[in-house]
Image (cartoon, rainbow, N blue to C red; front, side, top):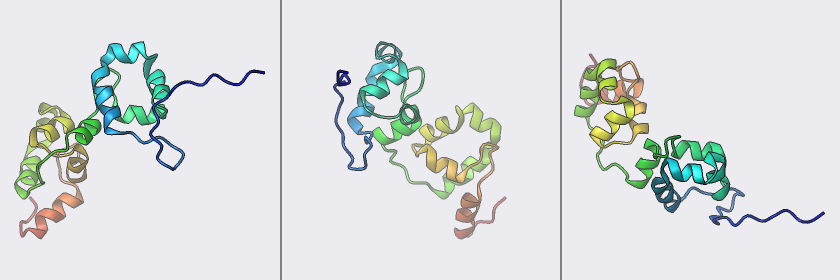
Length: 144
């Protein structure tokens, strides 16, 4: 039986047996778009090309070919620090305000903070998590 066909892949050895997702990969995925994903054979084809699991690719690339908020944050790290004023503003938004801003990703983009940090302090219903409440309390502000 002949040996299996070797598919040329981009090598980004992490030393752990897996392939690390690099900034260059994210930039290439950003340029792919929906047509590029289709030409590569869908998500499975793109994942094979970069020697990564399809689940890993799903964290960074959406079905429509755009980057996820997580990938955008890694490419262009948000510059703002979380402030007490932001926490108060987010708490005042409520669920309707979050939805009007485009969800968590929209609020995170607007305030230039990582979406993961926003989720740590704010719930989907617009209330602050215990982390958010504690941060306000430590600043000498009583939660509403």
